[in-house]
Image 1 (cartoon, helix red, strand yellow):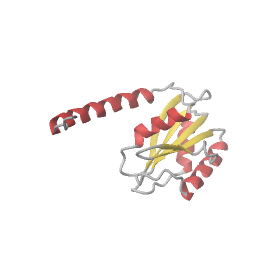
Image 2 (cartoon, one colour):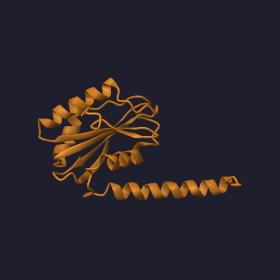
Image 3 (cartoon, rainbow, N blue to C red):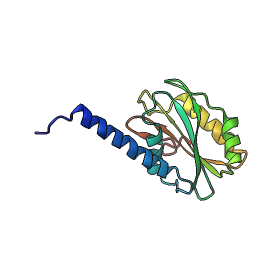
Length: 156
């Protein structure tokens, strides 16, 4: 029989888990990390966004070989939406000399399905960034159980 974990032990475990996640996130976000595997990229964004109670929109800026230059949280919103401004994403991509980007946002509701608004903003960003020769490689929707790749569904 497995004994129940006492409150003090659970608190110690929670602190250890939180610290481990901070280390993993910091290492994953180091410049130069290769960001070409969709499963790993989904896990990366899931680590960053899974516990957020509000919707956030992040962008990983990549070089020509899909190595990470920088990841930034550009927009934050409410429990079910955040406003994304393509102009800001394009400005950051140019400032960082990015050749490609990965987009991600979370759905605190737990539903990983892309909304109509998700598909629209993905198309707008792809068009706007394409004008300055920056490729949109994928858009991930993160929930507490998964990170859905819109590129895998041919929606990017």
